Image (cartoon, rainbow, N blue to C red; front, top):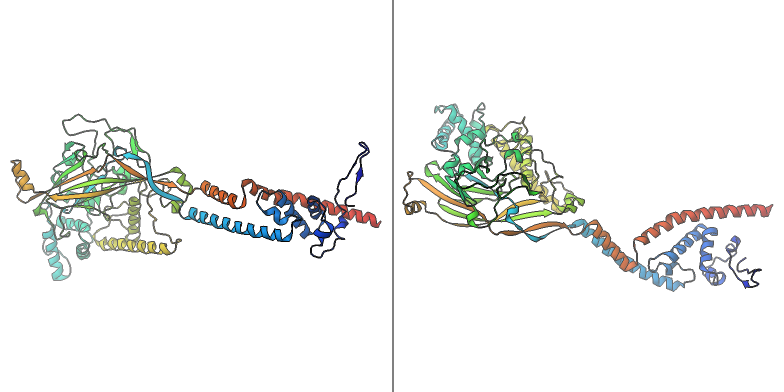
Length: 603
């Protein structure tokens, strides 16, 4: 029974030890409130009471015993005072109240931390070091003249007038004005770059069997590179512009491009585009008497930068921000080529700046260079880099795509403008069964003809409306999916610019140089593009709340309010798994032993 002494025969001294109570002891204890602690067990050590509850008590008593055992061992603050055997009730209530308040604040702060990790785990900030301009390529400059055709080759105003006069008279076209097949072919091709209202007025009446090679026809009708740009200057050296310009098809028609990547380096298959300029710009071979720079070798990508390339590189770069090392082009136009029947009343040149790996989006911002003006463009790069640990987050959380995450069907490298271009091309193909002359397309998809002009214009308007509606819906419901989902690239390069403009009087300039020019309707413009500074500040996309940070913050909050550490969690799992299983095993053995004792007693 409880508290019996045992005599030590070896030392002749008496010592008292406590053994576990008889199992029937708990059956004799009164069950009314407070009697267990105050009457029967007031002097019994708590360890014996806990073990007895677990091994011999009822299920409820065993659960309480397990909680008492855990509370004596846990490092969580305050728990032991709630479940301690001899602790007065009011003290237990006091500690329960304090622990509840601490737990409330801990959970609230942890929830706020979790929401911050969910909503804004990534932050955009300035990089710690300045980036010199020679680390990035000079912008790709695309010059799109408003003069689309040479009037001596094809006069759109005269041909369209004859075409329209017959339509106005007979409401049909049977070529009563005796237009040549070549003139009708050129008209059908030119309609693709005319203003929308002009194109949609003529297109339904163009004969269905007139199917020109739109891109090649527009190149043949355009003014030559050398006539539009007689001379250029790059990195302090003068060139004939036709030696450093490429023809490139855009939504604005055929444009002249400097420092763009070749089609084979932009597209997965260069046959995806309907026109490629056969004249490849080769900066290994210079066209001036000065000694040439190093031969171009190595490669460049937006993610890795320049690899094994010297000062002379592909794409081109510059080490200085002065106007002397800028890109300069003298652009000329003739009034007899001005065309107000196809295009708007605005004359001059649209200039687009973009990163070399992307195609120019002519629907975006552009620089207008009017005839008779000098325009100075000061460029400030916007270079965004991202740390590798951003791969741990989904693109939706970081709001960008890495190049290895988003596959584009037509383009080698992912960029927002390339994605938008592919999205428009795919949508146009699905709606019209053809692609506009400048769009990338599969090899088996034809180029749209004049009869399809209304279709692809409508498709573009429909796509813009869909994207606008989806974007507005996403502000109210985060689960709304946006078609194509063209988020920015995690590593991106764009060019912001500032413009200075002044009047340029070509006639007085020629007179000042004592020169004579043979054309009386000649108008000139000057364009200069240069970096504003030698170095610039890049933008760095970094992780502000990683998984490690979240765990550390939550652990700090739990440690402050509850004294919980990682081992406390392991300890909790241990007590209610391994220890629980062991106690249940001992409990079954004890019950089995009791049953055997009862059977022996009855016998």
